[in-house]
Length: 77
Image (cartoon, rainbow, N blue to C red; front, side, top):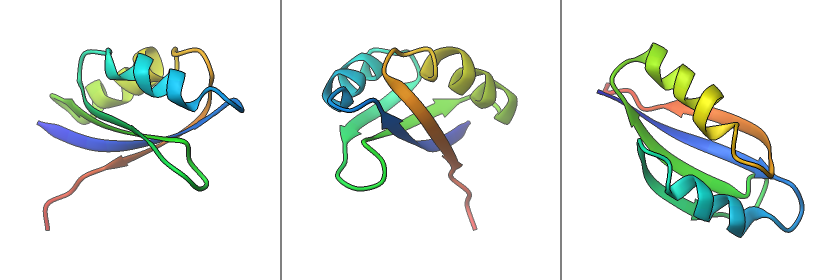
């Protein structure tokens, strides 16, 4: 299982809408609004790195109002 945090920038005024929409996507375990350089943070899970990449491109970036994403996979040291 691969876990990642996805930082999302949105169009002005659409952060709450994006957080609500992305929370409904299968694989998302957390979706919250932020203040700062990013507007929304998402915690997501996938079966592999490849599946995570496909998830971000096909599911996350398809949500209207998103302008940029930064995916941060969690590692166990």
